[in-house]
Image 1 (spheres, rainbow, N blue to C red):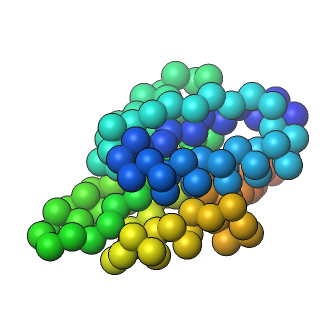
Image 2 (cartoon, rainbow, N blue to C red; image 1 turned 90 degrees about the horizontal axis):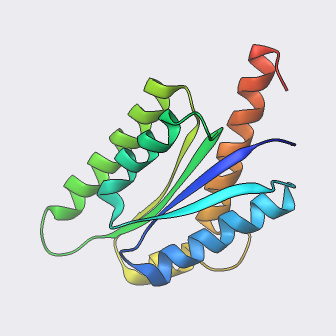
Image 3 (cartoon, rainbow, N blue to C red; image 1 turned 180 degrees about the horizontal axis):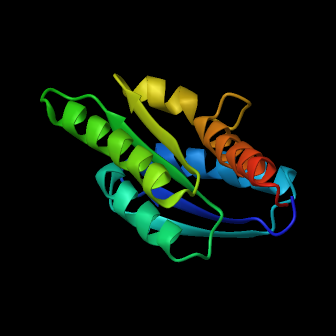
Length: 146
């Protein structure tokens, strides 16, 4: 896919995990021949929707890959952050028409997060990147553009 411009927005919180997700996403972009992407750091998962919307509204990207990790603790914080992030990312896609993928892990344990961010075929950053690229392709097909 030539001419595709991608933004990757990565949460800095839980960086061991989000770094693995980012590596997975970058690997997919390289494998798919995507040459134009820029990576941005968000403070945490909750900030991903606003940053994704800001990027989508610039007109300089065809898709945004959002990557983060929220691990359940002893309080309700997990539920609020997870739901707010998921709904926010979905709203960005619907409001802007730009594919924005939800590559945010919402796990109960650190171990679950590490497993999903390893450098293998099950890396959720890879899945998020593929979802964004596939959505861009389908939107272009529907609109009759390349």
